Image (cartoon, rainbow, N blue to C red; front, side, top):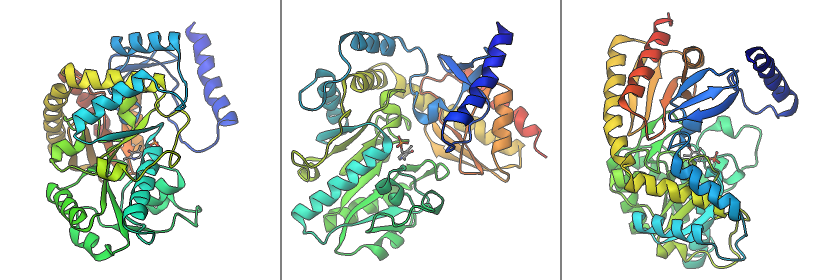
Length: 403
Ligand SMILES: *Cc1c(COP(=O)(O)O)cnc(C)c1O
């Protein structure tokens, strides 16, 4: 049995390079199963999972409610298009609206699509209510918003844009956490400002509260649409359902994806009524958007987070994890800084992260980088103290190997 799966492992990885396009650089393990906060590879090795499919699998694995509800829905019907209504999508929209204090939901299937939807909504709103020459969008340097042409242009990092020019016109970049740099590039043509409350791919960098407050103030004064990209930091990751609730600064539009479906692809934006008026029938659409499978998953996620104590757990474990990482920093000079909020933490290293991450994998812990020098901690939101202890112990062993 072991022998056979061992052969399979080699075949799977070899076949992958033969048939899958060369856009990723995966670590050499084949994930096959998951349970709680652990995943298993095809050789039956277990790994404590502090990656959670990159901040996606917020409920861990084999969550009973998720399995039961999805199984039931798959046995009924999975998709009907937006030519008709379906109940799960309306239930989720009601929950998103009631919990957010925003007013209207648009569904899509990924983070990049949610950013696209927000950018298009902002331009539609501006063209309708402010005039056709109000189209400029300000985003932040070191941000990440996804890989479609609009989202990758909004992304303030050249490494994602190389070789793709010409990019979407009308996007300008300001310094994150520097309100003067935003003010310098605002004009009468500015229709939207996009910001991640906590920058994820850019290295786990939280926004300062005053920065978001000042953005809100400027957007109010100039009737500019304020968009928060909460694709990574939203859906409970900071200990509140939405990241902006941790900051107590409300955007006009919030972008969601990753954790919203706990592993089933779904994206969404929620907008206030004022800005949502930018869209009319025919203005934007997604064939799969709001299908019964993805919204059944989102229904479970929101219920587990808001009614089942998951948010309380995030706050409790976040304090514990942050304490442990700060202790680790005192022991290892290779750790330059501990950053983050909630269960979205990062350590910046004086060295590159890949060999340390590989060493943790060899010892049974999955971690993910954010850029070349940061190791990120985005575990399932149902993690417990004993899991954090184990992760810290493995990471500590891996750091001891760094000279
Ligand atoms: C991951 C991410 C995206 C892109 O999401 P995809 O589902 O990969 O398209 C956009 N914004 C942020 C902040 C993200 O972390």
